[in-house]
Figure 1 (cartoon, rainbow, N blue to C red):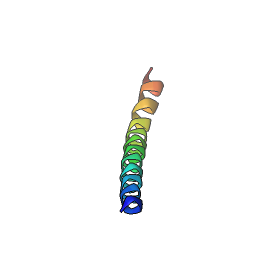
Figure 2 (cartoon, rainbow, N blue to C red; figure 1 turned 120 degrees about the vertical axis):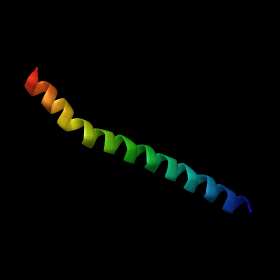
Figure 3 (cartoon, helix red, strand yellow; figure 1 turned 30 degrees about the vertical axis):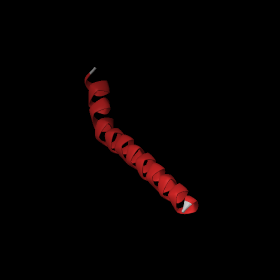
Figure 4 (cartoon, rainbow, N blue to C red; figure 1 turned 120 degrees about the horizontal axis):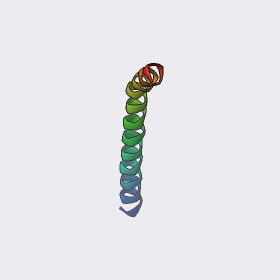
Length: 42
């Protein structure tokens, strides 16, 4: 029981971490053209 509990906690942690990385990646991909446009216009 302890092993499975630790495994589930680890999996949840990896899922949350993966979600944050994906979110940051998506923001970076969507934000890059905006920053480029601002730099060119500025």
